[in-house]
Length: 402
Image (cartoon, rainbow, N blue to C red; front, side, top):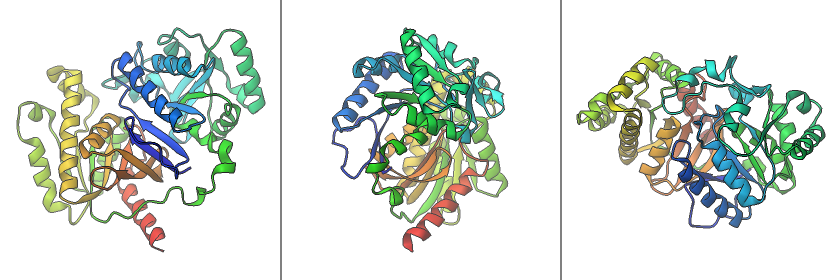
């Protein structure tokens, strides 16, 4: 599907040459009332644009707190749509996120035993999604088990009808393969609201197949020759591994020190000055990635929220400076960092391009300086993601030129 992702709620209508519209909000960790207000504004714009089905996307690790924001936002969207039932399914099997017996797994580990238990903002220490979501909502939460999915879309619809009859309004859905997500997509084609991680979207385009006449070139992007750079603010296990892999491959790397930032030292200027003579010969990586023990030490000294905001602002400023000196192909690692960077760049929308790794595409920016931008969740991507991203871009450019 030709997809346009806007940064925040736009003021202009959705262009006609778009099949799917996405409104990106920085609402995961803000107060619940603020997340609800942002989400309802996005809903209003999407409905005005003619969107037939609304999809509330949350993280595939379901990370949130006991007070939200997944539950409160889901409730508000359901009320606004007059929706009496929806699903909640963070599964993304190709990325190692599966749900079984209502429990979320990250790879072979329960969520509560994965690296997410040490997340600096939303530590997840309960793998039972029914229990996690029920703590956030006044709506009754139920379950659609894997053996139901195994019997196909009609069996799922029948289970939904039975849950609704029992007063359930939101159901956690098991899924362990991408085929499960495609089956689920067919089963929820009539729901006005779907809530899920990005994985369930695999099953939705088939419901609109008759209208997708431009599917063969939906991921085409313009060429943006120039310097290449990576900024990383994530401290997830996956991103730590990716940073180490980039270092092992000989990539030039600069590590930001949050304590120096807090002390007023000129870390941003120092990082940019370090990058300038290296950009012409290689992609450069500037990061604040650290092991959990180091992250806790920094948080104890600076405070959890202050430490995160300090690093985000610094990396956003660095990214903006790099683009100003000619970086046109930029990779950003970390969800919060990505939000800060697109705001600093003045980006208003992203045209979605080819996929680098499951759930992470290249995009072309609109608003501000036009560049190619890859925004990576901290937990996503293979160990060689950073080098793979630019290799894919080279291949895509050759195909486009041909």
